[in-house]
Image (cartoon, rainbow, N blue to C red; front, side):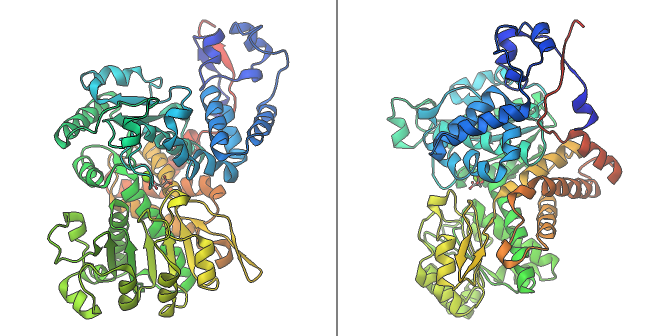
Length: 561
Ligand SMILES: O=C([O-])CC(=O)C(=O)O
Ligand SMILES: [Mg+2]
């Protein structure tokens, strides 16, 4: 525990109000003196419990729920009641509880958000309130906000438009900022921009708790987001803003509009790209091949696919390829088949990555070719799934790929688990245990020929907590692709000792160390790139230790003492 966390906190509130404040509540762990000083006598049962004892009981209660969604509801209740206990519990059972508070169960929680809604958390900023944004930001229960995750609920994981139910995602992501990145929950704020929903079920659901209205027009949307960003910059000018789960037509334009104006990034474009490049580098190390030797096919060319492709190109350039040669090693396929520059309807971000007519001729492929044909003709060594389509990677697809590449790298990244292109079990069986696999959602190890293989979870949760920590310790003003690449390389280094059976990434229980390493490396790079004021490594390390929040109770004194 750092010296800072041993200092007492001076409080002005007491009694039921203190018990109802989740950031400060200690429940049965309030000492006799605190119970007397803060008018808690009689409000709590007689016995004094330690945090460890409370966590033990909470874990038994948690285990009494069989269904993941009920475990999620229970943990969220603990979070809303006593955040110290919640994070202590998470720290203790991280591998078990991460899939409950985050992907995949958070997907169910978003789909059933209205049904399971209990208590307010974060800010819901609805379009009808657009003239009241400053007041809304002042209503937030936190004053010193340093990390914000915002969504408009329009593309929640691979589950489409969930409207206000999308709030589950910022809440889950910010829990990981705390548990993996050591960012105090007092500094985090989830925000849902409620601009309506085009999900017909939600529009007709009598229990839907969002603004029951079709999504607003593009023009209204842009003006609303602009107002939101301006209000945010006035209220918390140094906060990091993470855009999360915005639909494809909005994600990249928003990033391009705001990335030079404030400290922000899009997690699905940049965070997913950073973790995927880091994981690919780990697979390349196992194969003893540079990334620039791989031929990569993407199934899915949305914001995640194109973001990953762009980051791979940058990494290949670092390895010495020209941009044009790096591009030639990548092919993207979406609903209209293989993307080519001959297609007249492609948005700019896809056009830049689409294959040229010359490339198509060389490979003997037609514009719009289907996935199987592309695999047959282009003979890729890497297949990345960001399609959201369960079963897209059929046995034929995988076997055809392996015909030309004995140890294929296959990353079915779509989330949550039920949207995956092929399960690790299927891919391992079809390739006789040869494929190097990483998935977006967590999967149990696969057993093939008496050997257990751990499956890496190539999820942006390896990246964003460290980015947030870097912003806090170094005062970074802007998040660039170069900083994201730094994070990828730190992750690849952390994976340098992984053996094939251990999986391509260290287990998620290593996330605190990885986040610390990412934070220091990204902070140093930001200073080099003039994106943060100069500091020595020793100063950054000291700032990191000072800020790294761990769940422990601090003693309280009355303000009047
Ligand atoms: O939330 C996750 O698990 C990863 C992610 O950003 C997404 O799938 O949109
Ligand atoms: Mg996301």
